[in-house]
Length: 289
Image 1 (cartoon, rainbow, N blue to C red):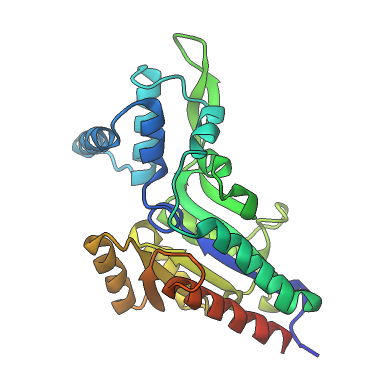
Image 2: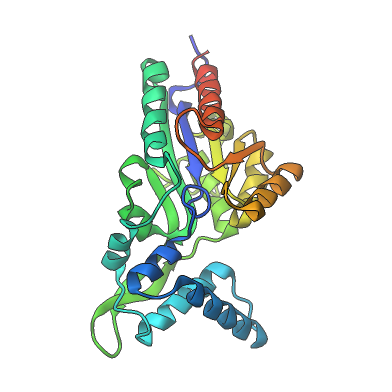
């Protein structure tokens, strides 16, 4: 009989989105739907960021892109984007090979191998991208929780149309790391839990060793450091067609931010799939031992 408390038998695989599950950012997809060139958007975003810096202000990258997007909506450079528009745009977001099958297959594997012992698998998304687009994408039915940036709708000052008007949440590197404490202490399920309060480790619903984190680098390094030191398992993925992407994850491995890395191919039998499956099985076997 296992000594693991029943409440600690949840395995969580958390994923960054852009560059990890998907080759492009959600902004690439959104700009395409709006009929605007994504690279032009990013060039002008860089100019906006420089203007902010030159003014003596300090703005993080996630607030920069969200404020710039709001600026373009308010100045009618883009159409009247609201949260429903973002949700619909998410349906067009492309993913790396095998992602949908991987999300379903791994849940079925855990249910088959460990379900009788009360072990479950949850897939989470932890992204600086736009939550409504992720919720509208093809992976949404197979994901348990989405932690991401989000807008509030309001009325456009000129047209009166419903558009995105306020930033509801901007999820950057620090907030990403914070998400894992919310998962660890169960606050993502029970909002009444204050995850800043002290909680004995044997009462935390998802211990850190029950977690895995799949990432590609950039905004994930802070969360990687936190998880690596607490017994989680970090896997970096890289675009097989990008040497720059591979260099990034190699550096993460050399700096002891991730345990391993592989090309972003989620099809059954791929190198990445074998790594993920093996780790899930290892955690499951420990929980029922």
